[in-house]
Structure formats: C-alpha cells, structure tokens
Length: 143
Image (tube, rainbow, N blue to C red; front, side, top):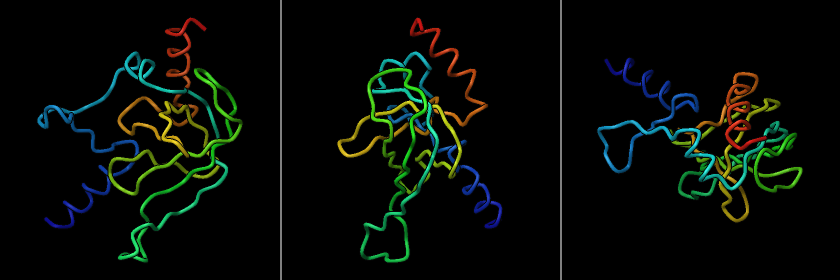
C-alpha cells in the first residue's frame, strides 16, 4: 500500500501531471484555458533549455534543492518582449513545471523580478507536442 502511494505521488509530481487543485474550490481540478493564459501571461515564447542551476536556499536542509533555475535560449517570441536568454525558476515541489536540458518548449511566462515562472497546470508544453498549442495561440492572437 505504501509503495503504491509513493509511486502515485511520484507520478503526480511530474510537470506533465502537476497537482492542479483549484484554490477557490479544493474539490475541483484547475487548468486554465488557452484564452485565459493568453490574457494573464507577461510573455509567451518558444525556447530551449541550455543550462540548469540547482538552488539550495534552505540552510536547514543542505542536501535538498529548493528550486531550479533554467537558462532558456529564446528561439521565438509569440507575445511580449523578452531578452534572447531568460531565466525560468521552478520550485522543487509538485507544483512546478520541470524541464530537461536541451529540450524545447512553448512557455507561458509570468515575470517575477529576476526570473520568469510558468504555471505547471497551464498550457506550457514540450515541443514538438506543443506545436498545436503554438498554432492555436497564434490564431487567437491574430498572428
């Protein structure tokens, strides 16, 4: 039973299946529509992960990672204005959008001062699976 629970939690913690509970009604799952994310995003880009930095900000847990900083080389800007290279922060918890080195994604970004973040329950997607999201976003934006 414990092994089943542990495996279930591991699967749920991946970026593909983040824990997406509606904060206004914990009995509902949360997934913003593409139109909602187009409205709420500071920028939308396609980019490739070129580096990962592991952050350990909890000094009480020297072996644990608090968050990950991903360096993203932007290959296309769909909405907004961003630099050619940006930093994306993902917390080390079940509610973060985690990525792998040298993968490309469409990112729906929120600016957080020194870095960007993305909603793990949103429409950010790894390419080439995200091509349909890119096409639909461009159509909705009239591009």
